[in-house]
Image 1 (cartoon, one colour):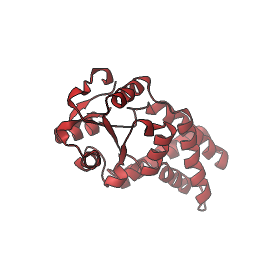
Image 2 (cartoon, rainbow, N blue to C red; image 1 turned 135 degrees about the vertical axis):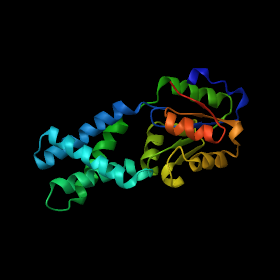
Image 3 (cartoon, rainbow, N blue to C red; image 1 turned 90 degrees about the horizontal axis):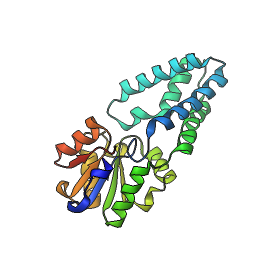
Image 4 (cartoon, rainbow, N blue to C red; image 1 turned 45 degrees about the vertical axis):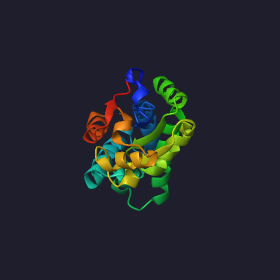
Length: 211
């Protein structure tokens, strides 16, 4: 956990973003509701039906783009939902649905108190930090700015720019290159055993779960 990490032997930190610096699910649920409420209003359908369209769209996107950052794209979810319901192509509605999701999501995001203490500890000990995260660069930058992470974080690497998601080694190696540090000089903190733990340990990087 954050509180168990002794930074003495490390020069830098690789840090996951979602469900590590902040808690994802509560933000996701309100964002999803905002998105589906707009879908319901736009097509006069019940929420239960909208949920079915959301799940189908999500499965389609993940099937088509497994292992790529765009597999998490709410814009693609929106596009596929509209295509299943409407008789015509509605580009603006797809954009509006995506923005409905993320605007509400971002509005309630806040740094977890334990993560905040850890970030301050890193700052006080002059440890370099690089975020290593899946998902697309634009939305992760919006999260970065909403949480004002520039106060603590030196770099951000996304799976979109790496071309592959964790646990592949490339995102981790890109972060190490930006920090100009080796695997033995950093620690990885992230919530996912299959992505953060496996990816870090494959390169000989120590790993801790945040919570």
